Length: 113
Image 1 (tube, one colour):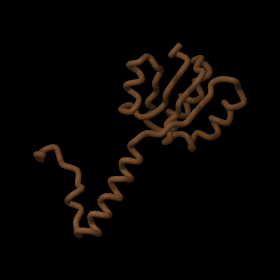
Image 2: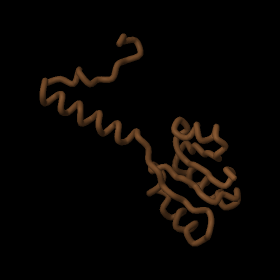
Image 3: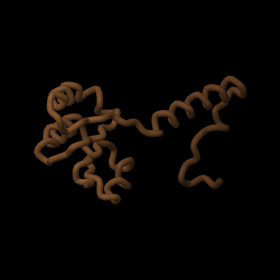
Image 4: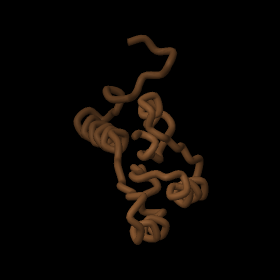
């Protein structure tokens, strides 16, 4: 059953899905992602979740697949974009309020908590 579902995205994001038996792909670049999308039909994939970093860039490939019954390609996003945006907003607010962003800087590996 799970060999009919695939996920294309960053390795650190989709690794837990591999542990559950979902077919995963972690392309290093857009060209490699393009090859993965083109291979989905040959690999008998029914549903593919494609990370937002590749979704728009692969519009032509997704359009070609949409004329067929399978595979269906659906986009997904993750928490990292929102977390980065919130961090930026917090830094900007801290600078406005205190003149420094030292209250919201990420700690380095050698700093204590």
